[in-house]
Amino acid sequence: MQMGATQLLAHYAVNLRYRQIPTEVISRAKACVLDTLAVALYGSTKPWSRTVVDFVWALGSRGKCTVFGESCKAQAPQAALANGTMAHAFELDNVRQPGAGVHAGATVLPAAFAIAEEHKADGRAFLTALVAGCEVMFRIGVAAGNSLEKRGFHAPALCGTFGSAVAAGRLLGLNEREVMHALGIAGSYSGGLLEFSRCQEGAMIKRLHMGKAAEAGVTAALLAQRGFAGPASVLEGKFGFCRAFSDSPNLSFLTHRLGRDFETMHICIKRYACHINAHAPIEALQKLREEHGFAAADVQEIIVAGMEKLVTHHGIYQPRDLMMAQYSIPFCVALSLYYDPRDPDSFDEKRIRDKRILAMTRLVQIKVDREIEKRGWDRAARVTVSLRNGSRYTSLVVNFKGTPQNPLSPAELEDKARRLTRPLLSGKRLTRLIEGVNCLEKVNDVSKLGSLLGRDG
Image 1 (cartoon, one colour):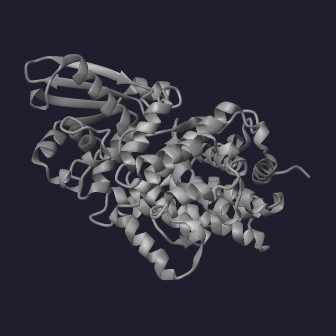
Image 2 (cartoon, one colour; image 1 turned 180 degrees about the vertical axis):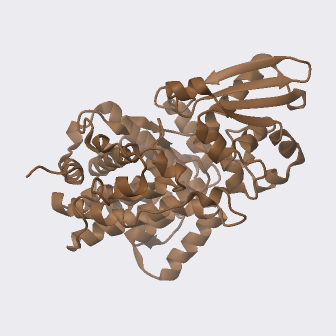
Image 3 (cartoon, one colour; image 1 turned 45 degrees about the vertical axis):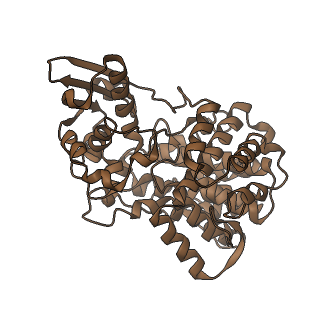
């Protein structure tokens, strides 16, 4: 009997071997690891992260898994919940480019890290699980398509459960049938709505979405390990994930060139603490300022043109809280004229009441760019600045810094890690962490990295 897509993905995930993963894919996975650990440590200080951590400790069940920035350890599902929330706490975590509604670092990694620590897995096993989770999750995101978010679902919260279930399942030693069931169970945990981008209050829920997905994947794998079953056609079935959530799923991509092309290479690392769709507009504006030397006071109008989603999802002119501000392209573009967008502290709660930024926000127009749409330049932006003296300048950014086509160098990645962890890790501990990630395949117990991430390190 021919295997369906869910079964084929489970077969692939269980049978992937470290030696089959190309060197460049391992390098990209390591970049994801270092980036996520630094981002999560920074996110651990945010009030919404503290609320989740307090909730985890209130449950009272201690375990073997590091909660980043804490001295105590938790059970795997709770550690994944806390660490995933921290990783997504401030719009700094890595994504896929081209976009597919997936966040590898904030969903797959917390699940893999927790189970790896609990079972004292080595670095090779951890990296293999991370790649397996990315390969499955990225394909699911592409197969489901862009209609998820057009319909009001927050795609990473939906897709993340599958990637984390695969990574956790591998490290638990599940067989093919058990991983298939873990995927089936994960499908019923998929959820997350975009109403946070339009609500009067409660936008904080977005911060929880990745942690929820990481926790759900771990739980799904643990249930499958105990014999709990889920549908074997959860992805491709008539009432499966892709058809239930998407208007126009591309089911063939679920197994497209599986084992030949590595989706992990599409990991994109952020430079700015805002939604990824704001990165090209910010970079384009920064380039124009460097080239022409104008100041914020000289600006009469800024036009940001790109894909339709910029208008429908990110045209927020009066953000009511910081989360909405980080989701707003007009606000992020305006802020970048007054503060360094590479410094996450620039995105401070008080900025949403800064009269200069709010006035500049009103000068930003967002439009659909037909050429960008026609060429399918996902997340590209064409920025046109009109100055009060009559000058007009335009810049098109297709592959912004951090994309797979224009990646951060190792030095730039380490610089980001230092910026984020400076108040939390000593220079010596950060150096040890960077060295540990760089030679992760030689680490015989991933919990050694965990010892660098706790409060008492």
